[in-house]
Length: 178
Image (cartoon, rainbow, N blue to C red; front, side, top):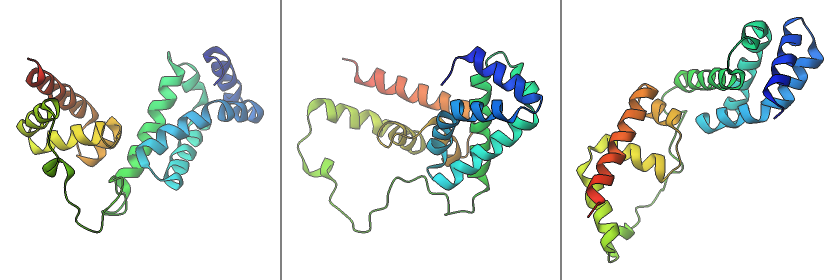
C-alpha cells in the first residue's frame, strides 16, 4: 500500500474525475480491502461485491473521503459496513460461518484422552461461561473468526461482541491464575 498522503492526493484527483488516479487508488488499497471483506464474508463472490460497492461509493464521494482524518480507516470501515450489509442480506442457511461440517459423529478426543492440569483448568473455566459466550470465545480463538463475523453470527452489535469477549477472557484469566 502506498503512503497515506499519496493516497489522499490520488483520491482528491479522483474527485475531479481522474480515472487513472482512481485506478491507482484501487491498485493500492484494493487487495487489503478485499481481504477485510473476504475475512467477514468467507466467500470470494460476496467479498468482490462488497469491494465493488465500496469503490462505487468511493468514486461518488471521493472528495468527502479525501477529507477524512484517517483515510485508510475510513475506507476499511466502509468496506466492513458493505460486507456486513451483504452478510445480513443473505437468506438463512446460505451464509454459513461454520468452517466446515462433519457428516459422521466422531469421538471427542477431549473426553477420552488424559488431560494435563492446564487443559483441565481451561476446560473448567470455559464450562463456567454462558453457552453463548463460550461459543463466542471458541469461534474467535479456535476457528479464527473476526469480531465482525462474530457480530453477524450472534446478531449483536460489534461493541457488544468486544465487551463480551473482554469480559470472557478476563473471567478465563482469573480462573486460571493460581
